[in-house]
Length: 76
Image (cartoon, rainbow, N blue to C red; front, side, top):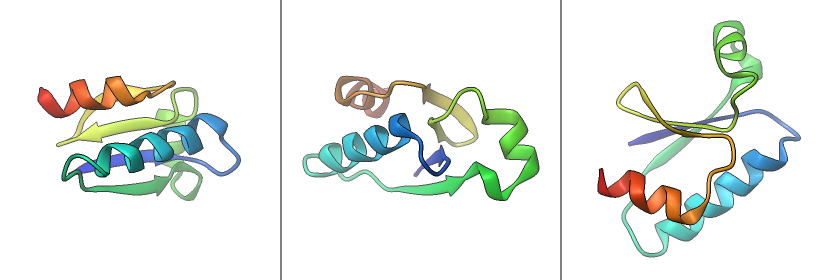
């Protein structure tokens, strides 16, 4: 299970969600989205890195997240 940390009006976040959707067409990927602006601790932690993709409490990818990056993250 992946967690995607985002915030509203974030172009890179929208792109990451689109890429996750494309990956889901070929692989059984489960993920949930968390808006960092609803939590002061998460906002402070990730505000300069978003979008951030995390798995099992570890950051897998952040920033410009592409399809190939996601595929590699699934393999690891």
